[in-house]
Length: 385
Image (tube, rainbow, N blue to C red; front, side):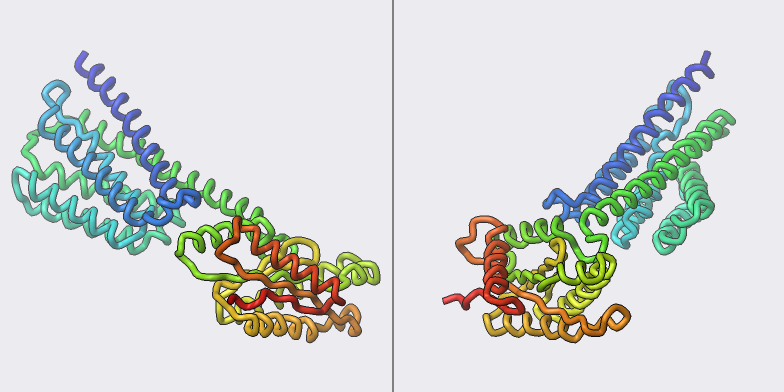
């Protein structure tokens, strides 16, 4: 009967451990990969450290309760010790930050020093070994995560050291085989669940990043697409209104008479021309001292967001530089006589703009003015009074 009750208690504890471990891991993954909540983004490092401390403190307190106060009915059972070992390891591998491993070192050392009933050579050695293994995991996290054998091996080593440390903290007498079967079996089962769930979450995150990249990158040119442009305009405008950033400008670029290239040659040639223009635009953005980001809005239309306050004179110099870049482009393998020109419209964000689209609308209006006036022209926002 006693064995059945112990087995029932073990199974319930095992299920609880698995649920709590997966839930905690999911929560930390959410914090570290959240890209929508501005509070989380702004305070991610502090949040992970504070929540890590709270979670580990809770587990250490429950472990103390398990070890010292709640073993009268079923004998010694270190349910929460397994949770501590898994949490220590997961948080190190998830955060890979010195502050995280230092926090865990303080908690492990305090737990041992404050609650041990006896200091033994083996106990002190096991404590130091536990800490050393945590630092080893931190220093080699990337390499360990790439190889399952190393990952499982490091967790097993940490589990052995931590379990030995806790065993040496008290005078438990002769602990029976059932105890060690429950302890080692529980750690192995929940450890496998944790590591495999971690790998599965890693695959999910990588897939989500690929989907996000495909949704934000133009497949033909590799530039950020219109969706990214709109999102960045929204973020710029919100930061501008809050006073976090200063004035910024938008350049809209349209290739002149691009339809002739497609009609004269073919669309594959047109795609090659668009890729060449994108390369020039990328170089243009990278060399702009004010800081800029390039986008393809669709078709032969491109854009640039310049993150600085620039005068009309400077805006003209930037626009002319890109026109010169296009004029130098040659396509000898297609037709050496191909010459490219573009029309450009520029606008700057204004204090009385109502939405993030207003600056884009103004740049688009100036672009239309350039094209209507004869193409290969530049129309700019006037200097502010």
